[in-house]
Image (tube, rainbow, N blue to C red; front, side):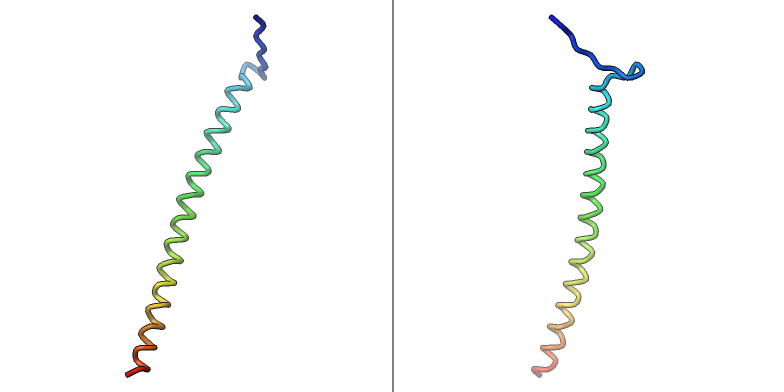
Length: 62
């Protein structure tokens, strides 16, 4: 059986790949949370604008 190991200065390439994957997952989680927060904030502003328009329309009808 032949074991193929690639190392760079005592640090295994496999270890570096795993660390990069975990780092990418961390970045994705942070990006997802930020995206959700921005979307939630925009949705709230949009609902406020819609509510204001409905109020204006109901005032015109009376």
